[in-house]
Length: 103
Image (cartoon, rainbow, N blue to C red):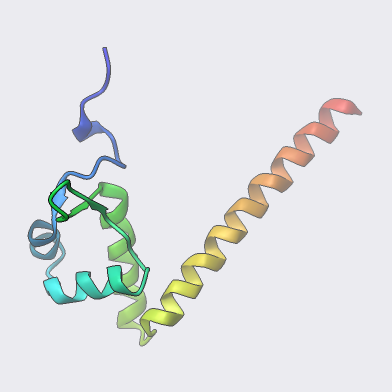
């Protein structure tokens, strides 16, 4: 039996209005996050933004950074650098496993 979409953290289940209400932010703020490529929600067939639970978590983090005075351009760069660090850590771990198994 396959899991339900509600169990999938990446399933785009929530509308812009729902997310704005949930996080107590302006809908315009969420639109700006999309425009600045900070948080890019999925789009429905009609073009409406649909957010996943992962997207919502990311928006929460962006709200925190914004509250600390970061601009959206700076936040986008921080998120990019965090992704790079994550990828490098995964690569390092894979290399360590490979070397550990070979030695």
